Length: 81
Length: 440
Image (cartoon, rainbow over all chains, first blue to last red; front, side):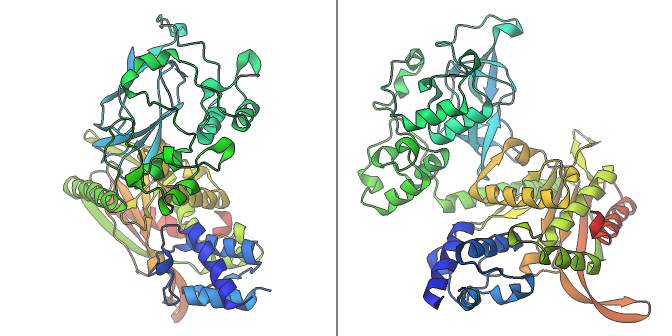
């Protein structure tokens, strides 16, 4: 999956889990917990929505790679078929 | 004759806005039936009636802001309870609450639905049928005479409660929108499109009757901040807090979670908070002095554990709705209920009991990286448990220093009810429970 497709998938996952976040909030450098106030429950739902939409099943030991929006997109781009 | 009044939905509530009636004059209501939605600045809460009878008059309109205790509707007890009721407007078929709610969500007026069930009862299938059918031409209803001043000229379009709320917040007239939901009902998405599209609110027809001005999100956040501030000030003024802190070894809990989650699909995975909530629920059940209410100068312990959980709203402010009977839920069920509660709290849709019946509260700021939190008790509760970040810490054990995952648990408790000794036993019980995660 190219980065643009991954970005679209990640953005729509955020729109579903945290609809109060605007498109402008989702900069690559934005940190999920500190900047976007995504808690562990929201995070689990994000991972779930991404798994449903792209088939990327993120194991727990990779969670740390998903701690920024950019990292999330890169991870999805790398692992989606 | 009895009156349905503006309920007190939380110790801090002084007034509320009636945002939605789920009943109208002539309706038969049953004990426990949801009859109205009330906006408390914190959340929109569905409220049930404790009366059994016929609604004879609505005394408040949607949009009215009223103090706690203000009469909202008159309900006359049904003849079976010994009092002669005026004949309801047309005999109303029986509808079970789930069907009523389904119809309500779909924007279907039950008066338009033909009941095919036993004794003319309206079934789920009847409502589904009505969704497919075009809306009936409005037959003149007797109850319309009761409120002629407010009767809108045209029947309002079908819409879901959330769509109506969103439209009210954004100042959009539903009559200007095209519905894409079942039977042409207006959905949340339609409202969103209406805002982005050409139908600017300024071109919308004025509402049929005056309403309080729609609240902007900023104003709402300010209202919530004020409410939280007033409650916390009252807590600090009236409750003599004492605080205890304990660092809990989470090696066993973390290992158990990793092993459990590794074999589960994402949807079934647990977060550490679920174990912390589970341990707290059990400890609260075992320690009556931490679980209950202090009212009218004395403490009444609660036999049930309704675990309040602090949820931060990204728009600003916090609310602490309760997971009802949390001590009876195994970890998986507790996790599921917590997820659901957080989602509904953020969507602004909670039930009355969830907002008013917490017996003890937990705040978990670990996700934001703080080590510990010494919280303020929610009156009339008498204890608040705080958890910080789950992180690896140097840990001395058997004369050696190693590294273990740990969390700092804190207790803020009410000195009128307990002392540090009891509080310490409560905290150490939480610690003990977390050492055997498989048994939780």
